[in-house]
Length: 260
Image (tube, rainbow, N blue to C red; front, top):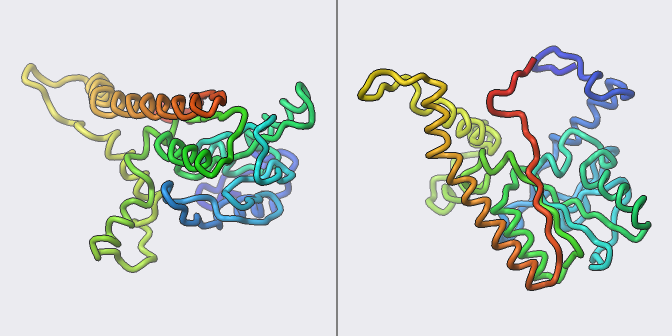
């Protein structure tokens, strides 16, 4: 049962008992991130029943892949929390399904590494990819899954706390409003409500039309340009190493989605 809504979660997790669901969600949300140079944060190593994260922030696909990785038959998958697989077990993530499918088609020598991390978007993925190449962790193929966090985050999620630390204004912890997820939600809400109720010189413009136009001009297009810039930089780095890249734009039901 979801304590926030009173809605049973068993339809979302068929075949799992309520205790198992609670255990999975506890492992999902009880973990803290760890600091990492350049990217700012990574998934902290963790060993659980459903969620297992190895060193270097790589989530298990059910069985941990070897490290360091061998370039032959190796696929890196980079993305945010949907790539990491928040709310599902190791064997149910996108990279895990990808590994099983590739092994069925190509052979057991394929290894897919899940570099999905909470709050990651294209800029952080670019930084992580460059860091992996610098450390000579070079795959055969690098897959980037995006489509949500680029439209939510203006900067790395812990940047605000670091800025306060550098300015000497960092408040005491325990303020919920300082948590990244809260700040992200506030930014998203501010974007969605920006400009509502204003009128143009020729009279009121329909709210839906105005909101759509303003979002496109002030929010959507800069985000797309940033994503395409990061994509070009990743492609250039990959080309210098002779490896292939694949960019996936995931369907995310956020704007205007009918929750029924």
